[in-house]
Image (tube, rainbow, N blue to C red; front, side):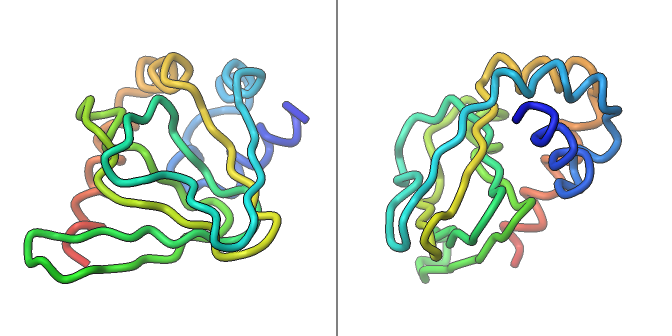
Length: 138
């Protein structure tokens, strides 16, 4: 499935679209996959994360409390990602993530492989920080 994952990352994850297939193929053997049933927690707020998570199939809900104190939810489908804040800021998870569909499949790029991507393409960090800022404003 590594080739399948490479094609998925290249074509469905907009943030990774500027990597070529060879660069993505270097990290796809390291990818772990997990399936979740509807209602399963994928990540709990405060958890220490060591992966960059990408939804391959199904949907998840990202649940967080911004400084205003009101709870917010954002749905992510195939190609959506989370866990980047923990990896970029070396912090615990700032939100909980719950599967919304049965057989939700999540790809997990380990910390070391994620760091390889950042080294290959330093613009990735800027793009991630921009996405985080936009997410926090919404």
